[in-house]
Length: 459
Image 1 (cartoon, rainbow, N blue to C red):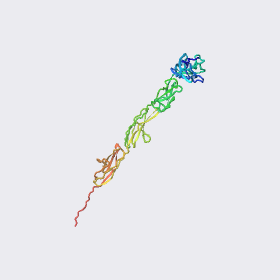
Image 2: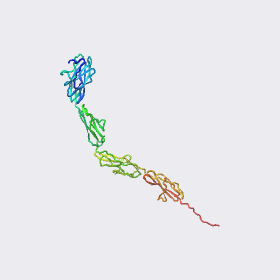
Image 3: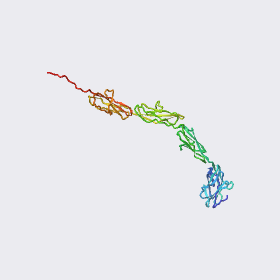
Image 4: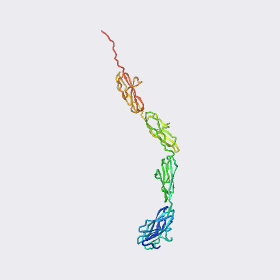
């Protein structure tokens, strides 16, 4: 090959189809690096050309490739100090580029990139990009020094480009068991990818939130709740895809029955010791499946105990001696077994036992004398305020109210006969009335003067 445009044009022709593999050792070498993969329908591939040599002034490279797979676009990344001339259609199978040193002397290169040729992938398949050199038919590539002498030998190392089809990517999921399921069931979701490649990646999501560590083709959970939405995002490992990452269909978690929600068990009450409460009337639960069953329970301070026979919506507590909490267990039995919920707790407050106070004290007085006041002590238990009513009796059998005597203490008037007194003490809230002890005020009979007798006459 003769010298090419030594002074001003100095062109390097390059024809190529794909990026080269690593070149072998030689004093002077041209390498297309490395083999590349591109996607059909216009994916651009940059093929770098690397050069090693001493005193290089002109370069002309011719590359052939399959024009049904690649079409030339242009060039870029020209090394500083080089002047390119690009001929994309030197002939039907060959593209060419000429590179000249912008100077008057040759330049040394050590595996330096001198230019990148840009190809567009237009169809699928693999083609070599071949640097034409002897014994190929002319034209063949060559390298010259600044005197126009060909530099030999030169090792030319080709590469290849593979055009891949653009594959549509999708993914679908299914659950085992299928919906509906029972709460707490272990459910496994399995992803089925389309064009996922050899090592697709996954990220499972629940309610659009990524589940940490859920990055396999399957996802298993026992904690999913009603209406939780499960899906997966899959990224294909194929080079050329559309629709990647792909989002799967969504599976909504459903149960066999609606959520089982307890009814209510009434409102708090306050009653007297050993009293009868107003009936506790529970409302039925919702959800689950009929028939429902009921069991009233009471709390002893440590555990809840079933009340024998209390299996209706209504229950009337009786004979309570202390404050007690009640609730109702409501249950149903279906394909998932028995589910039980508890109503609210109802507190029945019990007033302490109502115990009468005392009055004092017994006295003995003279006829028609005012006795000392009678004093009383308040009752205990029940509910305040307490009310009082003093009563009196002449036979300690039949007592009658003393008008106006409604205080804790009472001062009787002058008495002419032995009299018995007691106090009726009454609790608020209907917790009863109790009689105190009886105080006796003994009245001595009226003191009547005696007589002396008889008149006498004496000497």
